[in-house]
Length: 198
Ligand SMILES: [Zn+2]
Image 1 (cartoon, rainbow, N blue to C red):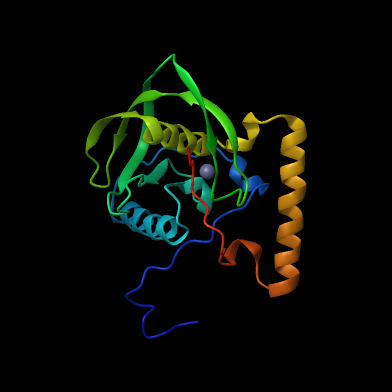
Image 2: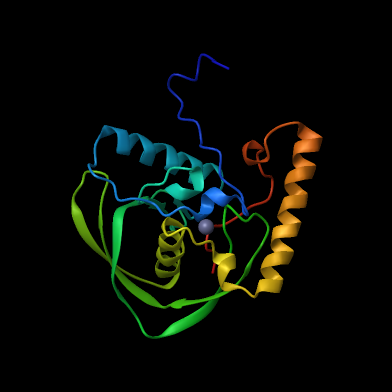
Protein backbone atom coordinates (compact mmCIF):
# COMPACT_ATOMS: atom_id res chain seq x y z
CA UNK A 1 0.00 0.00 0.00
CA UNK A 2 1.45 3.33 -1.03
CA UNK A 3 1.50 6.12 1.51
CA UNK A 4 2.84 9.65 1.16
CA UNK A 5 5.88 8.55 3.17
CA UNK A 6 6.67 5.45 1.16
CA UNK A 7 8.72 7.28 -1.45
CA UNK A 8 11.24 8.51 1.06
CA UNK A 9 11.16 5.81 3.74
CA UNK A 10 13.18 2.65 3.34
CA UNK A 11 11.09 -0.32 4.42
CA UNK A 12 12.67 -3.20 6.33
CA UNK A 13 12.95 -6.53 4.54
CA UNK A 14 10.94 -9.46 5.92
CA UNK A 15 13.35 -11.73 7.86
CA UNK A 16 13.34 -15.46 7.11
CA UNK A 17 12.63 -17.61 10.16
CA UNK A 18 14.25 -20.92 10.97
CA UNK A 19 13.64 -23.63 9.70
CA UNK A 20 12.95 -21.90 6.38
CA UNK A 21 15.01 -23.87 3.80
CA UNK A 22 16.12 -20.62 2.13
CA UNK A 23 18.39 -20.06 5.16
CA UNK A 24 20.41 -23.07 3.94
CA UNK A 25 21.38 -21.47 0.62
CA UNK A 26 25.04 -20.60 0.07
CA UNK A 27 25.49 -16.94 -0.93
CA UNK A 28 27.45 -16.01 -4.05
CA UNK A 29 30.08 -13.26 -4.12
CA UNK A 30 29.05 -9.73 -5.10
CA UNK A 31 30.49 -9.04 -8.56
CA UNK A 32 30.34 -5.23 -8.44
CA UNK A 33 29.72 -2.95 -5.49
CA UNK A 34 27.33 -0.56 -7.22
CA UNK A 35 24.14 1.38 -6.49
CA UNK A 36 22.12 -1.83 -6.53
CA UNK A 37 24.29 -3.29 -3.76
CA UNK A 38 24.29 -0.03 -1.78
CA UNK A 39 20.48 -0.03 -1.90
CA UNK A 40 20.45 -3.57 -0.49
CA UNK A 41 22.93 -2.52 2.22
CA UNK A 42 20.78 0.48 3.16
CA UNK A 43 17.66 -1.64 3.47
CA UNK A 44 19.52 -4.33 5.42
CA UNK A 45 20.67 -1.70 7.93
CA UNK A 46 17.10 -0.46 8.34
CA UNK A 47 15.98 -4.07 8.83
CA UNK A 48 18.68 -4.78 11.42
CA UNK A 49 17.97 -1.62 13.44
CA UNK A 50 14.19 -2.11 13.26
CA UNK A 51 14.60 -5.65 14.60
CA UNK A 52 17.04 -4.44 17.30
CA UNK A 53 19.69 -6.83 16.05
CA UNK A 54 23.45 -6.33 16.10
CA UNK A 55 24.06 -8.09 12.79
CA UNK A 56 22.28 -9.28 9.67
CA UNK A 57 23.39 -11.38 6.72
CA UNK A 58 21.75 -10.97 3.30
CA UNK A 59 20.77 -14.66 3.40
CA UNK A 60 18.36 -13.83 6.24
CA UNK A 61 16.40 -11.51 3.97
CA UNK A 62 16.41 -13.99 1.08
CA UNK A 63 19.19 -12.26 -0.85
CA UNK A 64 21.88 -14.84 -1.56
CA UNK A 65 24.88 -12.58 -2.00
CA UNK A 66 27.85 -12.18 0.36
CA UNK A 67 26.71 -9.05 2.22
CA UNK A 68 26.71 -8.50 5.99
CA UNK A 69 25.79 -5.51 8.13
CA UNK A 70 26.80 -5.21 11.78
CA UNK A 71 26.51 -2.67 14.56
CA UNK A 72 27.70 -3.77 17.99
CA UNK A 73 27.95 -0.24 19.37
CA UNK A 74 25.89 0.89 22.35
CA UNK A 75 24.86 4.04 20.48
CA UNK A 76 23.52 2.07 17.48
CA UNK A 77 25.14 4.47 15.06
CA UNK A 78 28.35 2.70 14.04
CA UNK A 79 27.27 0.51 11.13
CA UNK A 80 29.81 -1.83 9.53
CA UNK A 81 29.34 -3.21 6.05
CA UNK A 82 31.19 -6.37 4.99
CA UNK A 83 30.89 -7.40 1.35
CA UNK A 84 32.56 -10.62 0.16
CA UNK A 85 34.14 -11.20 3.60
CA UNK A 86 37.02 -13.67 3.73
CA UNK A 87 38.36 -15.06 6.98
CA UNK A 88 42.13 -14.52 7.02
CA UNK A 89 42.77 -15.75 10.53
CA UNK A 90 40.89 -17.08 13.53
CA UNK A 91 42.41 -17.44 16.98
CA UNK A 92 42.95 -21.01 18.16
CA UNK A 93 41.61 -19.84 21.48
CA UNK A 94 37.88 -20.33 21.62
CA UNK A 95 35.20 -19.35 24.06
CA UNK A 96 31.65 -20.44 24.59
CA UNK A 97 29.11 -17.62 24.58
CA UNK A 98 25.36 -17.29 24.39
CA UNK A 99 24.01 -16.40 20.95
CA UNK A 100 20.69 -15.44 19.51
CA UNK A 101 19.56 -14.83 15.95
CA UNK A 102 16.93 -12.67 14.27
CA UNK A 103 15.97 -15.76 12.25
CA UNK A 104 15.54 -17.86 15.41
CA UNK A 105 13.46 -15.53 17.61
CA UNK A 106 13.40 -16.14 21.35
CA UNK A 107 16.10 -18.83 21.32
CA UNK A 108 19.49 -18.34 22.98
CA UNK A 109 22.14 -20.98 23.45
CA UNK A 110 25.86 -21.46 23.88
CA UNK A 111 28.17 -21.63 20.87
CA UNK A 112 31.94 -21.97 20.89
CA UNK A 113 33.75 -19.44 18.69
CA UNK A 114 37.24 -18.09 18.19
CA UNK A 115 37.80 -15.13 20.51
CA UNK A 116 39.49 -13.09 17.75
CA UNK A 117 39.38 -13.03 13.96
CA UNK A 118 40.91 -11.14 11.07
CA UNK A 119 38.65 -10.66 8.05
CA UNK A 120 39.16 -8.98 4.70
CA UNK A 121 36.06 -7.46 3.12
CA UNK A 122 34.87 -4.71 0.83
CA UNK A 123 32.94 -1.77 2.24
CA UNK A 124 29.89 -0.20 0.58
CA UNK A 125 32.18 1.85 -1.68
CA UNK A 126 34.00 -1.24 -2.89
CA UNK A 127 37.16 -0.48 -0.91
CA UNK A 128 39.01 -3.47 0.46
CA UNK A 129 39.84 -3.39 4.14
CA UNK A 130 40.99 -5.65 6.92
CA UNK A 131 39.02 -5.90 10.14
CA UNK A 132 40.67 -7.20 13.26
CA UNK A 133 37.99 -8.08 15.74
CA UNK A 134 37.71 -9.60 19.18
CA UNK A 135 34.97 -10.13 21.73
CA UNK A 136 31.40 -9.47 20.64
CA UNK A 137 32.38 -8.17 17.21
CA UNK A 138 34.44 -11.31 16.50
CA UNK A 139 31.52 -13.52 17.52
CA UNK A 140 29.09 -11.50 15.44
CA UNK A 141 31.30 -11.66 12.32
CA UNK A 142 31.63 -15.45 12.65
CA UNK A 143 27.87 -15.82 13.20
CA UNK A 144 27.01 -13.71 10.13
CA UNK A 145 29.63 -15.38 7.92
CA UNK A 146 28.05 -18.71 8.83
CA UNK A 147 24.73 -17.43 7.47
CA UNK A 148 26.39 -16.76 4.09
CA UNK A 149 27.38 -20.44 4.07
CA UNK A 150 23.79 -21.45 4.79
CA UNK A 151 24.52 -22.22 8.42
CA UNK A 152 22.29 -21.10 11.30
CA UNK A 153 23.76 -21.17 14.84
CA UNK A 154 21.36 -23.91 15.96
CA UNK A 155 23.39 -26.27 13.75
CA UNK A 156 26.02 -26.19 16.51
CA UNK A 157 23.54 -27.51 19.07
CA UNK A 158 22.64 -31.14 19.70
CA UNK A 159 20.15 -32.79 17.30
CA UNK A 160 17.67 -33.06 20.17
CA UNK A 161 17.87 -29.35 21.00
CA UNK A 162 17.65 -28.47 17.32
CA UNK A 163 14.52 -30.56 16.89
CA UNK A 164 12.91 -28.89 19.91
CA UNK A 165 13.69 -25.43 18.51
CA UNK A 166 12.36 -26.43 15.10
CA UNK A 167 9.09 -27.69 16.58
CA UNK A 168 8.70 -24.63 18.80
CA UNK A 169 9.29 -22.15 15.98
CA UNK A 170 7.03 -23.96 13.51
CA UNK A 171 4.27 -23.90 16.13
CA UNK A 172 4.82 -20.18 16.76
CA UNK A 173 4.70 -19.49 13.01
CA UNK A 174 1.45 -21.44 12.63
CA UNK A 175 -0.10 -19.56 15.53
CA UNK A 176 1.05 -16.21 14.18
CA UNK A 177 -0.42 -17.02 10.76
CA UNK A 178 -3.69 -18.11 12.34
CA UNK A 179 -4.00 -15.15 14.72
CA UNK A 180 -2.95 -12.42 12.36
CA UNK A 181 -3.63 -13.89 8.96
CA UNK A 182 -0.29 -12.37 8.02
CA UNK A 183 2.81 -14.17 6.85
CA UNK A 184 4.83 -14.94 10.00
CA UNK A 185 8.00 -13.43 8.58
CA UNK A 186 6.25 -10.08 8.19
CA UNK A 187 4.77 -9.88 11.65
CA UNK A 188 6.55 -7.39 13.87
CA UNK A 189 8.06 -9.02 16.92
CA UNK A 190 7.57 -7.49 20.31
CA UNK A 191 10.46 -9.38 21.89
CA UNK A 192 13.91 -7.90 21.77
CA UNK A 193 16.15 -10.21 19.80
CA UNK A 194 19.83 -9.54 19.54
CA UNK A 195 21.74 -11.19 16.78
CA UNK A 196 24.70 -13.05 18.25
CA UNK A 197 24.19 -11.66 21.70
CA UNK A 198 27.05 -12.75 23.97
ZN1 LIG B 1 21.74 -15.02 12.77
